[in-house]
Length: 293
Ligand code: MN3
Ligand code: FE
Image (cartoon, rainbow, N blue to C red; front, side):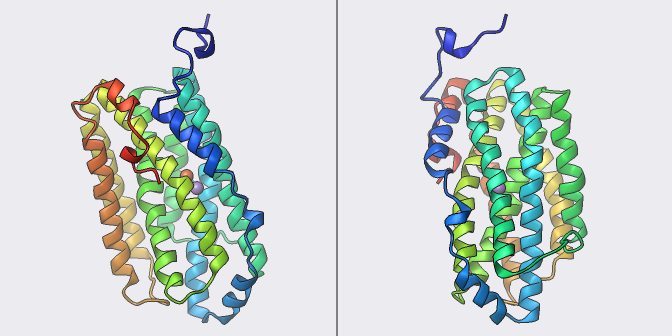
């Protein structure tokens, strides 16, 4: 017979990091894209040059598709976590799927409000298609039949450390750098700010999951770093080669690469801290220690 946390001496661990993330999500994850005013964005969109609109659409079509992909691809993670019996983690993950769906909702609503309609699938660069049509779904789907520590690490590294922690974070940096300085698209920036805060919890969850697995088997640290390095050396390099940004700021491409490298280093540093730490210590970390805003 299975053991329910609620019916055992253990109970629900309200001091555990996943439960604290769940508490944060209940408070901060409930913003509504419908409450954002896009009227200024519509005006600003008309005022942009053709090249600026093309460039913004490149990134927005990537984000819109990525949010839909991650909404679909988090499901095997929830199911795997439920199968291995991590209840506090599963409680947190119920908020995760809701938030990813809401992020897709936000980009859909934004496009509707600035008057962009129709099919966007041709816009993203080949590296984007490879990540979201092949690598991410395949890695996450494996959790349906394999809940081993290696399969969980592959999933958390690909989804949380790489797609969210390096690629999406770099995208937010672009939006701030290119739009905030010219004071345009306030509704888009407001939504991005909310999304970024939700994502810091998602990345925090992935960091925690990898750290707890490393604390149980220290050899998994090298395994996780190798996996992340592989993604950095292949798919991220392809992103850098294939994108051509510069319609708002000619130095942005170079700065995006530097920013991505910094994000990568931050992920590596925080994972390294799990080595030689006990499982109980990892479980009781604060949100701040895994980088949650
Ligand atoms: Mn998201
Ligand atoms: Fe996310």
